[in-house]
Length: 231
Image (cartoon, rainbow, N blue to C red; front, side, top):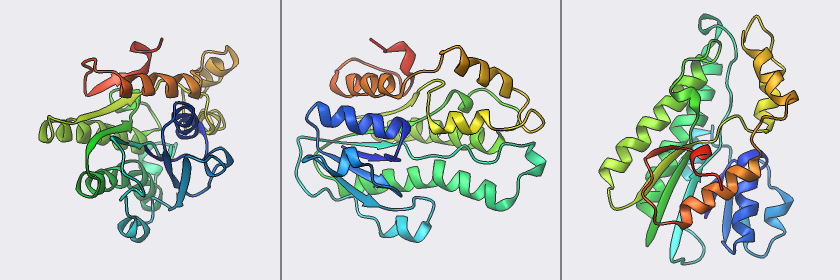
């Protein structure tokens, strides 16, 4: 299994659960997690996925042959949280590059370079389908990811290709959201309340559900919500 954005949050939880189930996990990101690099079935490649040159040079040819190889495009960023007209080029470009362009290019590499049976997943978002004031770049980037998954699924009907909506998950990104101001993000109070009320989804829940989906033969929509398949 190849997982991007493994240093924390959902990506780290997916890696840990996959290792627990006996998968070989190859992580990609900027910071190597101890849980992965110290495991006999884990490996890590350092790559800033917002760096076009580094991404172009990255190879997804796995070091071993597996019956099934899975790519989870999880790396992402919240991007600028502010009214759309105040976001600058660098902020927008970084968000779109990391959330969307890198996932598209990695997926193309995966389809071209990896042999055998394959499955392909994207960490999507409810923000792809619901406009959120202050999140213009993030909403746009995730909407593009959802549509890209839909297109790939049409082009490769023999492969399992999905984008999953994890819900509000207790990750560093959620902490970043709570640190914003009401002037830039009018709904920040709601996110603080969800955290204080203990309503956030655990990354481990997302991970176990995704692994269940990977391991099942059940028919699942291209875009699906983790909450619909949680044990």
